Amino acid sequence: MDLQKLLLNALGMQPEDVIIEKYLTNTDQLSTSIAIRQRRDCRHCIKCNGQLYGVKQWVEKKLYGIPLGVFLKVEIIFYQLQGICGGDCNNKTRVAKACFIHPHLRRMTTAFAELAGRWMEETTCAAAERMTGCSSMSLWRLDQWRMKKKKDNFKLPNDLPISLASADEVHMMTLRPQEQRSEKSLWEKKFITNLVSYDLSKVITNAKGRSGRSLQSCLRQLGPELCRQINFLAVDMHDGFIEAAEKYCPNAKVAVDRFHVAKALNKAFDEVRKQEFEQAKQNKDNFQRQILMPSKRFILVERSRDLSKENQSHLEKLRKLNQNINSAMLLVEYFPKILDKKKVEEFRKGLKLWEDLVVEEGLTSFIDFLKTVKKYKERIEVYIKSHLTTAVSEGINNKIKVLKRVGYTY
Image 1 (cartoon, rainbow, N blue to C red):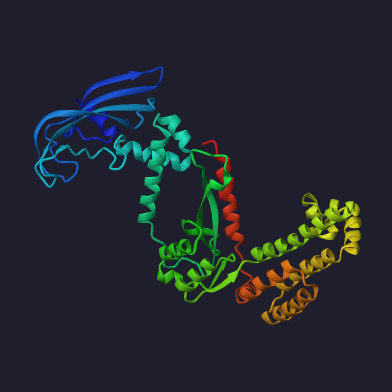
Image 2 (cartoon, rainbow, N blue to C red):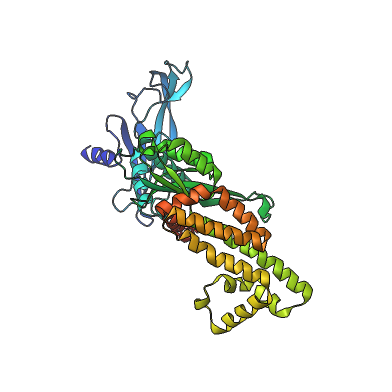
């Protein structure tokens, strides 16, 4: 009797609720099977906790149990009482309440769910599957349930250092339709928006998607008190993010990230390269066609001192032959120097000179880029004041992507 009590306590059960009827072990597979029957005294409905009547039978269920010593795989054959509920269930047939069964995953005991959940915090779902014998899908559902419960119970401290913050999205998964899986236009990409504290270099809150609503959800999780503590918030050139920041962070000045401005500038330059490449093909100019082809475009944007002497020579020759490429390269070289200015007044003067050059050269893609700069000029000036970027967010997102690639087969 003492051994049975000890075994039930190890499984997270009480002797007054159940009784062990059979105990079988397999030393070759290090597994065990335990038959447990619920006592007749346990007559409370699993739904409404009302009294059960007409209890005459037991329903057989198979549960995953906590490992016992060397026996990692423990199967519990549980005979659960069944009767008519006299409570709020209106005489429906119900099973009796069993506190040791997990409330969300009915094939697991609470002790097993807690142990497997902790294993998955330290390792992968696949490793937990190998150790427990539980299906990977059941473990994945358990992991999702635990994360949701923890997030619901999680509260941010009011003294959280978050005067400097940034927001950026990261790609999490791509859903492919069962039919026409090779058709990329039908693929659906899923993103998550992360709100990062620069003082901690950590993700504080996140939300599904990459729209303005996603950032609004992040800021709502943060709460009004912490939102008022944000002085500077860096985002990419996303109007939805800017509107969300202005709505929820009354004291924050929103800065447009320098990297995304430079990305738009390089895109404008690449448009010029493409146009000149097509022109060189039409003119059958082999030299320009070779150096302007997509695989060689790094030569045009790389710093001159980092290029080989041969590439430097080719670049100089190209700039003499092609006025548009030469003008585009001058514009690209000059713009980062404007962003390096320490004062807003100096930035405005430099931008005015750069604007005059763009208008004078008349390159369409750069004129379009100039419109973008004017649209976000106020946000770029906030960057000049604070020098705040989304670099920390980008670094964290890169780590997330590395972890995804490492765990791909799992």
